Image (cartoon, rainbow, N blue to C red; front, side, top):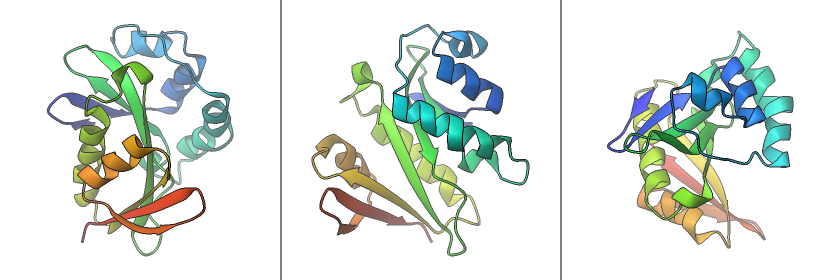
Amino acid sequence: MIETERLILKPLTCNQLEKYIKADFSLETELNLCKNPRLVSPALKEALEETILPNVANLNKNYLFSTLWTAISKVDNVMIGDLCFQGEPDKNGEIEIGYGTYEEFQNKGYMTEAVSGLIGWSKKQSNINSIYAETLKNNKASFSILEKNNFIKIGETETLFKWQLTLK
């Protein structure tokens, strides 16, 4: 668990991920959170079922690098979004992150704070040297989060910006 000024970032277990997918408030009940409707997109559901859950269940992997970390507002006691690492660090200590804020909690600085918390945790891990992320070029809010956390744009494709933050 990671704690920031306004948030708690909690890595979800296999059982909790299954409840997350259901979006029937069973996860919120287990975590003693206020119930707030959330949608699990078909793409996220597929990623959870086909990649994330099997990786979290694999005892040979550190599940913290495969699972969703839910961001919980301390004041409202509600889930406001999710973050994840996209697998364990590679041999160079590079790791990729992804994140998303539920619509009603956007533009309040929550995800900037959550990413900062994940960076702080990552700095304490001996096997992480740098963090990467990709954002759609037209998603100013998403790349603004990275800019506020000192990521540097290192490349682009036709539709994406590629970002990096060197930790060590």
